[in-house]
Amino acid sequence: MSDSTTKSGAELLIDALKINGIQNIYGLVGIPVTDLARLAQIEGMNYYGFRREDAAVNAAAAAGFITGKPGIALTVSAPGFLNGLPSLAQATKNCFPLIMISGSSDRNIIDLDQGDYEGLDQYNIAKPFCKAAFRVNRAEDMGTAVARAIRTAVSGRPGGVYLDLPAEAIESMMIDDKKGNNVYEIVDPAPSVIPSDESISRAINIIKNSQKPLVIVGKGAASARAEKEVKELIDTLNVPYLPMSMAKGLIPDDDSHSAAAARSYSLKNADTIILLGARLNWLLSHGKAPVFNESAQVIQIDIDAYEFDSNRRIDAPILGDMKSSLRKLIDAVHEQEVTVESQWLDDVQNVVLSNKEKMRTRLEAGKTSEPLNFFGALLPLQEYMNEHPDTYLVSEGANTLDMGRNIIDMKLPRHRLDCGTWGVMGIGLGYAIAAAVETGKRVIALEGDSAFGFDAMEMETICRYHLPVTVVVLNNGGIYNGTDKVVDNQPSPTNLDPRAHYEYLSSAFGGDSYVASTYSEVKDALVKAMDSNNPSIINATLNPSAGTESGHIDNLNAKIDLKKA
Ligand code: FYN
Ligand code: ADP
Ligand code: MG
Image (cartoon, rainbow, N blue to C red):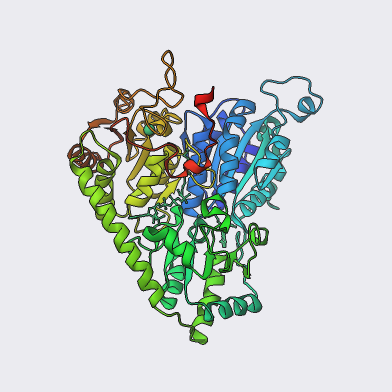
């Protein structure tokens, strides 16, 4: 330990995080970071210990998305670092601000490949998977490293940052000589980026000549906390909008401008697309026909110019942060009194009403369906979320994810977290833990039975910290579903055990357990679980034949003629 005039790298790291308002660390300790985590607790930070690093890093990434400050993850060297790496990559892909800090081995041994305990050149391995990687070799550089890591994670397009801490840097000492120790609060970590006047004029000219503009709101607008501006633009123009899954709730899903239930109709018929913090990637069919109208004009607001023209010509790129860009665009709409013919919104609303009526019929039938199907299992969640919109909802799976997204309305921003841009399984419990920790609110983790398996052991973490998380497992006994049979002497590649008592994983660690096999049982269990504030699992046992291959994205699954084999 240091005396009053010297500080270790570990102490300086913690000072630098704290002075920048960071309170929580999500991690899994071992050599060489155990004392670092202990010291964080002594210094008044909260340390949340996980069972596997990917979940810890996912939790930190979700904390970043929810709070707008970088989430902090801590892992041990080589294997711990490697377990955390996929989550670092996902955070970067999802544009979530995150700093993954890993202990590492002494450089002199690594660089000559002399063989060290868990020796790996982590710094160089991390680089392709994050926005930036930094290595700290001396205690006196700790403040600079944290400043650079925070600024990189949150500014511009947010993302994951890797901070490599060799054991020597953690232990090394610097004299705190009152001239300062290089630890400081960063000034304006994510500066505004104001778009040019010309880019706004170009967009206004397109909107003026448009009859059928559609706004697409992505999770970039959610990250930017631009809900007020997004709503103002949509209300002012009185046009329909399509929320991407993690943008649900930026405007309440029951808003009359929502085109979510008329997705195909609105995308196909729009003559102008106003893209707000969403990429034209696979989730938006790359902006191409037949899903999109090829001749539609596209206005795109993004903080990263790299994104423009990624798949099709962008007619009006607006480079700027979402809040500043929307402010300028809305002001121009008012000044120039731009209006849009309301027939388009009426047409979209008619399709919405008709699709919603079809959905209502399916949900109503689900109430009495035995065995239970997805509609009957998801309706209680819809009802609960309508009554308790401040609950956080995390979701993953295939059918569970897709049907849940369409059935469960969100009313508040950044309250839905899911598989994200890569469609990753295994994010659920880590994200749920972060949502509970960062907000103190109740959390539902809605999981397919396969998805739950990827990080189910984090139920112990949830119970250890007594977090108000209810995991609802929609158990249809398989990946996609449980009835596939290929050959007689082996389970199918998609089979899981439909009799699995997933709820035991909660009672095993002191949480509550429920089994539910009808709509009423799911509803009762959910109300009890949520009222109790206890960690819990509801095992909703579905018809093993419920669910389709790959959920809504079967078109992406390579097809082979199995009969020929
Ligand atoms: C949507 N819809 C509704 C509603 N909401 N109908 C009635 N009521 C409500 N509330 C309609 C919507 O208009 C569509 O009909 C249809 O339901 C499906 O909507 P969805 O799911 O939004 O759209 P689509 O085209 O099926 O999928 C688009 C997608 C989405 C790719 C963006 O599937 C997605 O986000 N997928 C992520 C998948 C993922 O990550 N999976 C994890 C890996 S699983 P139409 O308008 O008639 O088209 C590994 O296998
Ligand atoms: P979705 O999956 O919801 O469609 P994406 O993750 O594909 O959303 O896209 C998010 C986009 O938002 C990225 O291109 C990113 O650069 C952009 N973005 C992130 N933060 C901001 C911000 N503050 N202002 C503007 N654009 C942003
Ligand atoms: Mg399943």
